[in-house]
Length: 208
Image 1 (tube, rainbow, N blue to C red):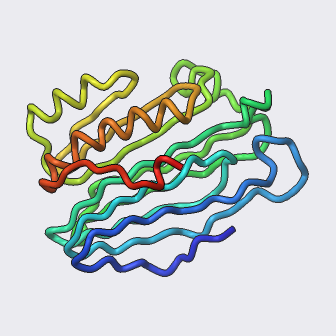
Image 2 (cartoon, rainbow, N blue to C red):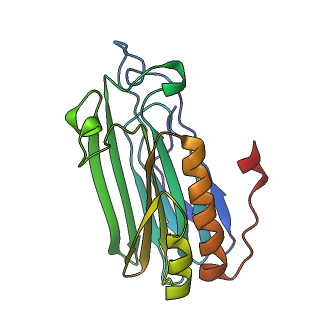
């Protein structure tokens, strides 16, 4: 499956986008088929709130996400990456996952992350890498976070937070996509009222 590389322009209304990633390829289940590839996903956010919450990525793939923000726009999104179908006893032993995420506001770089995870590579077991864990997740939120809200977010278990100028980064590392989602939903429920003054009402699709 391919995500279009043409920028998606979000106007003056709140928007929700979900990237659907196909299962298949040579990563979680060893196979000679080519590595799955996603075309770059680009979003241009003009004067709105934009939530990017794709479903769990169960098969590593290659792709990138670029967010371009106008002066008054805000972005709150997360991605959950599952390395192998552990419920079936399968590990990520072959293939590779290339990750690239970029956020800019009026052309100024706020966040740039690039990485490559090799199936069966040393990074998966290293204490400086995944430490044997199979699920990682990242939440990114643009905007200034006050000290009280940050303290509440830091109380969420199993999540590490970093506050940068104009950006908050939350990380999860574990073995459960469900646990990762619960942690990030809790962070989201604290950030949404603080950043945009709206109640944290979960979309119904999150319960499916």
